[in-house]
Every structure is written in structure tokens, then in C-alpha cells.
Length: 219
Length: 219
DNA sequence: GTCTATAAAGGGATAGAC
DNA sequence: GTCTATCCCTTTATAGAC
Image: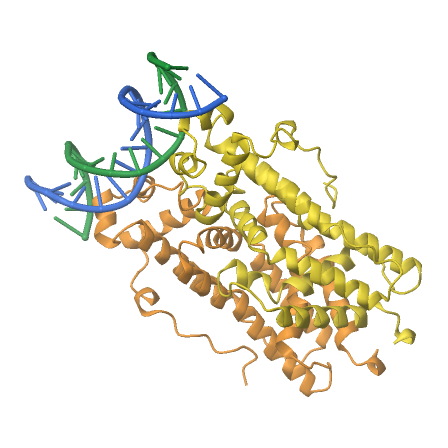
């Protein structure tokens, strides 16, 4: 098995079939609210229909059952969140500043209520829906890793960093960024971090990362 | 002085009520199997009773309901796993070797099927059972952080490391250790890592950590 | 396509005998 | 303490009218 998984094509029935404003869109929105706040098992199709202002029959006319609706909701949300991972252009700036901006953006997304909610529900149901774990991983954590590794590789080519394995280096930075905060939110210990706290986490992580990955003479 | 931080007192109603071999123990074992493999919502009390070779009435005689049974299972499992986090005595060895051993033990626990299963189900239900998220976090991730921070502090006192904030440094090492592997198992992308793969992850993490936290002249 | 009404099944929890 | 049998409710999913 290869170390990295090539990005799979997205299942066709999910990629684009839903236009905003339509009943399917209302249904997906209601499903997102309920599934992410109460989990898969505790959410009833009845409640989804009620929240979407739609009858159950209409609901079943668009989605063959609870599982398909759940999968459609998760896949759509993964696509939406993955679009927020495109890093700003950081080519012509100081490495430390560029990494700090990437770090801030990453933590902003990682700790956002929608991302936390989707993370929770996908972890919860990845045993029942193995496909969803893969979709989420590829559109979220793996895409972040790819983006960051690409940046690190370019910085290394310019001699600003010393990076042997850009993927591993990216994982190291991501790990240092998220470990101080992610689990606390995921487990409900804290429900948010202030901008100042996030800034401290970012600067600590970048600082340690640069000590590890900037060639000694340049310090 | 012990290398590890003293274990916190365990909530009284969980600590010792259950002796092995008794029916409550059978019930907890069955609950663990089913809850961790199928989740809270998809597991029925019927199924638990059947798996435990016990009638439903017996089940309800020992646990007031599904939620209490779930909480008892999670709490017990947290206690069991937290006992595996006590690091071996690593005081009188090379820092790199000591950290590598800590790292191997940590990943061994983190990636073990029971730990993954409990992590999944607690993340899933931490919205419904806020208390459980806290219990898991304190007995798992937080205890690991405490242990490691204690070791790092001592190493810093001996001049082997330069550590300003031992908790933050511990989080950095933990993050670099887990990020390359944890999510892949959690989301079912991979179901295990070979010993060689783990060893590589550990040595990469320790190497980067030492570059960041060993004073320059000692390199 | 959308609704109201209902069927069919399964779940949590309990009564009462032993 | 433990079992068998059962109550009652919610849930998924569908039938049939408009």
C-alpha cells in the first residue's frame, strides 16, 4: 500500500446535483444542522423533514434513505470546507510571516464550529460509512498537508528551509499547530479560543518549526 | 522522584464497583464490544444483553439505563488505558533514546484498537455526554502531556534541552508523533502501521524535536 | 412533486414469577 | 438477582390523493 493515497474522483451523485434554493438544498441544510448537532443515530428523518419545512414523502423522493442523505451532507460539507484551504499567495514574503499566515488560516478553519461538527460526526460514523472517512480525510487533512508540503518544497528550493521529506515536515508543523488546541474543542473542554491564544499557538509552532527546519547558519 | 505525574483520583462510583467474573463485568465487556464497534445509537440494549448472555431485566438491575451503562464503560476503559501511560524510568539515559522510547510507547497506545475505538465513540458522543469528553481528555491526552512535560522539565534542568514552556514543548512533540499516523487510523484509511513505519515516524519526530529544543552548541 | 395518513419494525424500559 | 414476556413509544419507510 502506498504511503499517500491519490485523490479519488468524487462520487457523481454528490458533486453538483444540488442547486441552492431548491428543496433538496433545504433538506441538506436541515440535515447538516441536525446530524452535526445530535449525531447520526439521534437524528430522525421526521425531525429533518420538519426542520426543512418539507414532508417526509418529499424527503424520500430526493434521497433514498437516511444513510444516503447523511453521505450527501458530509460529502457536500467536505467540498465546501476544502475550498477554504487554498492558501493565499505567500511566495514573495518572509518565510516566518508566510507560515504564520498559513497557520492562522489553518487553525481558523480547524477550530470553526462547522469543521468541528463534521469532524465529530465523521469520526463517529467512519465505522458504519468507511467511504466517508476517506472522503473527509482527502478533502480535509490530506489536502492541507499537500498544500503545505508544496509551499515547504518551494521554500526549500529557494534555500530558506532545509527539508528532506516535505510531507513529513508538513505533518510536523500541522501537528504542532493543532495539538495544543484541537482536542480541547473536539471533546468539549473549551468551546473556543481567543484570537490571542491562537496567535500564541501559531507563533510557538512556527518558532519551533523554524528552529528545526532552518539551516543553522541562517539563524 | 518519580518521572511520572501522580494519577488523579478516579470518580468514586466507577473506581471499584465491578469485580471481574461477575455479571456486571460481563455486561460491561459486552457493552464495550458493541458500543465501540457500532457506536452509541446503533447499539441496542437487547443486543448488549444477548452478547453478555444475560436478560434485559438483569441488565437494568445493574445499570439504570443505556446512558449510565455507556458512561460506566467509557470511564472504566479510560482508567484502564491511563494505566498504560506511565512511562518507564528514563532518567539515566541519553535524551534521544529516552524520548524515542516514550514515543514508541505513546504511539503503541494511541494506535491500539481499544484506544482508537474509545476515542471514536467519545468524540462522537461528547456533545451528548459532556462529562465523558472531559474524563477521556484528562485520563488520556492530558495525562500524556503531563508525563512528557515532567520529563522535559527535568531534562532541561540537566541542561540537555532548552525548554521555555514544558507543556507547549510536550504538545509539540506529541503533535509531531501523532499527526502522521493518528487520523489515518481514526478515519479507517489504514487499519494498522508496521513496526518499521512507527519507528520511522518516531525517529523523524525526535530528530525534528531535538533540532528545535537542543541548544545549538551541543549539536 | 408534494402532501396526509399509516403501516411495519425495533427500541428502551418494566411487571411479575421464581 | 435473574428470567420470560410484554408494554409503549419512536422510527423508518410507503400508499394513495392532489
